[in-house]
Length: 348
Image 1 (tube, rainbow, N blue to C red):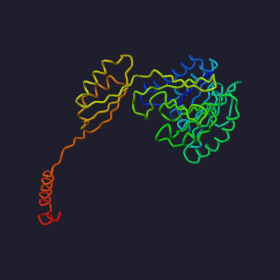
Image 2: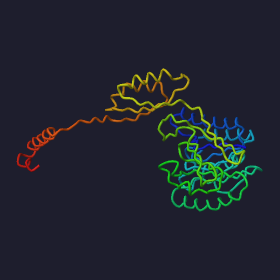
Image 3: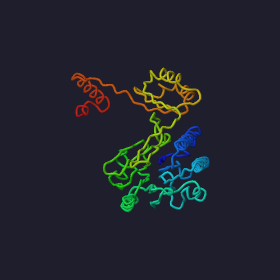
Image 4: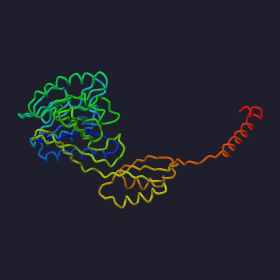
């Protein structure tokens, strides 16, 4: 038996740039197609399915189509809500509740912490929707005690699904530490951290993984880091996660100076396949102003779908001698005399 663990799909992001929005839809469709090809038994979506709590219609339609495709292949889908999926105002309903009747035919929301069993198997699933830092997270920790007892008594695999950041996975994540998680689950399917993370802790019953997003988030810098998801084999006593990389729009990161920029851009253009404009991030050192690279923007806009740049100013160091200090002191004296008079200049 095996299942797919997909997270942080952020469907509907990049609404201002339709090609990038479509890239996210394509990545999600790829993940579903690869899951079907691998003949997984079920799929877990560990939060931030949509980029906004009010996603565009195209994102909703695409999700429903893909979930229906899984169902047609006898593959069940289980999901929880991430922080992006949940409305910021309490009076608004999350998108999944609006389509509850239609969604129930193709997927199962497991974010309330109620243990369920996959079909007639011995696979237990428990999930919690994203909880905000503070009181909500503290309440979540209390609930961990109860579900840990359930997992301990369960004979078979048990999967915990969360959309929270643990400290060990990212330096700025502080919802809780890994050792605060329930100890008796055989797989920890997490979402929220925008980086692939996989680790087996001695104090946990199985591997803890973050697949990371399936595409670069609209808030993340362009990078060459691979994106994908996990297919997890649970046919044996241990859960074994296998990383599946997705084929995405080409992306490049180039370190250059303004003097080398034109040559490096042309060198990269010569390698680009004509059917898909890539993404580019420039890291420019010895940068002294926009005018140094202004002439290259037309070339960049023509050959790259999207590009960004980060600049680093030149930091030159000059040795200073005692004589230099004497010269500087004299210059200050002359300037002070000119502006405030010789008597006050002497006081300075």
